Each structure stands twice: as structure tokens, then as C-alpha cells.
Length: 258
Image (cartoon, rainbow, N blue to C red; front, side):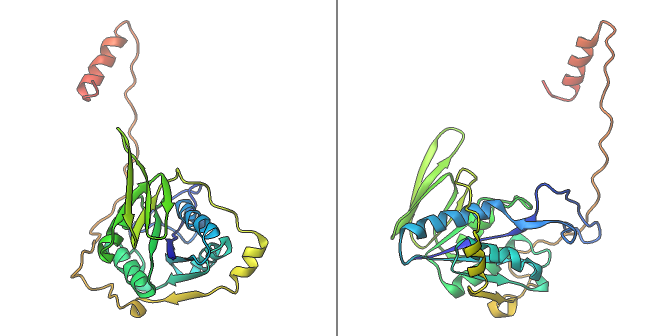
């Protein structure tokens, strides 16, 4: 079985995030960029299955700037056998439509039985990419799984909703996304870090994948304007002169909060 795990480099969630008002893109140059934690959990799901099932190949796939090589290699240090790193200047600021098209092209090129992704990244938080990928690849999609069971011929898991816990399953090949309910990822040890330096890491461009970032025929998002969020206005101050309750009730009513 071949399992491909999607890894994404994101700004560290503990750092301050700002937008460039000229480009509309997040400022990443000065940020401490790391592998998104949900992607690491997805890799842990794959590696745990591989540990117990000989013959399983786990690879990682990442679309990220050239400077992200160290974070891609972290997936190799954790235990993945190989990695594919998609790098192209035309992908700067890529929307979900282009991102899904590029990743799908890479997955078709290298082949897979199962694709595992996080349910949403901590930078964009769109939560749509796994489903869009499954559409491009024309395979089943199980989303937001809180538990995962992988078998030779299929995959199943639980999905929590407001009113129930749903059990879902499908045959392979398939795309699944997992939530933070899955276990924490393992830490790369020294042996893994050294071994990662010798593992295959293939770098591909859009030309290699046959994707044109300037082709507007597929669904593409175009940013037409951006503005800084207005400063927060001062709140309403109520001075109690015996009628504070009435003032509060009037404020809540006026703002349709009751």
C-alpha cells in the first residue's frame, strides 16, 4: 500500500500574523515557519499503520517555497520513505482552486492508495482542500475523522457531529482528512534525522506537472482589493445612577442581543 500525506508549512501559531497590504498575502519572510501540526498528526496516522504492516510505503507531498526544504525533510526524519516538494514562483499566493489542481496532478503522477490530510490548516483554515482533491482525483472522500482504521482494501473512521457520532467507510483509493482528536505526532530522533538526509526528495515545478497557473479556465480566485481592519471602537460605558438595568436592557435590545 502507498500512503501519501500532505504536509504544509505555516507561520508558527504563537507568532504575530500580519498581511502585506500591497500584495494581500500573509507576511512569511520574518515569521518562524513550521510544519502544520495537523499535517504531522496525519503523518503519524500513516506511520503507525506502516509500523504494523510491512510493505507499506509512506511518502509526503508539500507545495511550499524553496526555503521550506528543512520542513519537508522533517517528514522524512519522522519516518516517511520519500518526499515530493512542489516549488514554483507562479504558486505564490495560490488560491484553493490552483492548489488542489497542482496537488492532484502530483498525486496522479506518483500514484497512491490513500491520501491523508489535516482537516484544515492553521493559516488559511478553509477546510475544503481534501474534498477538492478527491473531486479532481475522482475518488471517495471521508472528512473530519476523529478516528481512523486502515485496511488493505479500505479505510474507515468516526466523524463527530453536533447530534451524533457517524461511522464512515470506503474502499481504496481514497482521500481522508483527520482532526486534532488523532494522536500527537512522534518526534524525529537522531537516527531519523540523519537518515532523512539520504532519503529521496524530488522537487517538481508546474511545468513538470503540466499545470498552467495563468490559465483562468478552471476555477480561480482573483483578489480585487484589500484594506486594513478598522481599529476597534470604544465600547458603551454604562454609569449606574439607579437605572443601569434599564440602560443595559435597552442596549441589548437595540443591538438585537436579546
